[in-house]
Image 1 (cartoon, rainbow, N blue to C red):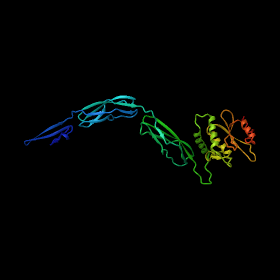
Image 2 (image 1 turned 180 degrees about the vertical axis):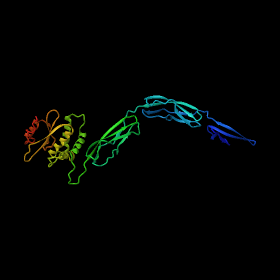
Image 3 (image 1 turned 90 degrees about the vertical axis):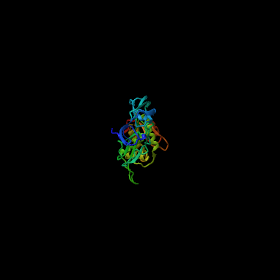
Image 4 (image 1 turned 60 degrees about the horizontal axis):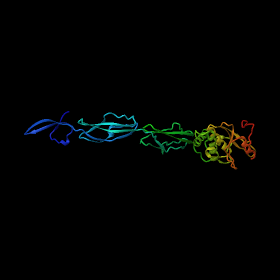
Length: 351
């Protein structure tokens, strides 16, 4: 390196290097080279470090302070193995500008993160067909070790331009690979009609509404008997009796029961029909032989024990008809003016 010419020397300003010095004495000038060398090793202090398996580590993470006249660099003598859980000794080397070195050791502890992230705020949403959705609104992800958890939202099943129920999945993954998934339902409903206009009713929408209800009242661990009871209980308790409902369109009847939550026996039967069908329960319609003043509709179900009567409609005398044999139902019908007097030439497979 080219030496720096010095005319005045201040020790405090000198750093490691070579300096050209002019010496003047008795009118004569002589030049020389001043070599400034660092021969004192740096002094530093260390700390033990704990990280989670899968995280990275730097040698400077172990050093708390360095004392030296020059700039220093910190290195591992041998890089630690961050793929191993447990404790290991890490050797650190600090080198100054004069190439003086100092070494020390510290303990590295690597823990295994087995706790998955927590997702909160996920809930079902209801929108009108064509509307947009804010999937992240109110959703938060926390983790006991990772402050920046990755959150993926899988809404590939959602079609906001089509009436129905769709699943959206929230997947949170921390740095250790622990994963949590929470799902919600996006309920896309028809556009509201002006007063006096008929609501948009399709079989597809009615089936989607039935699926939404079944999602809430049933689960995969339930037996078929438990499922039909859940359906019966929902229809009987959630639908209010109201005369005058249409009796020539089961889709409209099911809509009245599932959405409007009111109707007569046809509404109850149509609602039970779609719920049973979407739940995979074998069923069929049955009706009373009409008279001049009355008609009645209900359902039949078969869960492996033959056809049983399934009448979810509310009655004034509080009688209920869940999973009744033909003999049980006829005993009531015969003592109540033929409430369920059906044509046996049509329903020949009822035992």
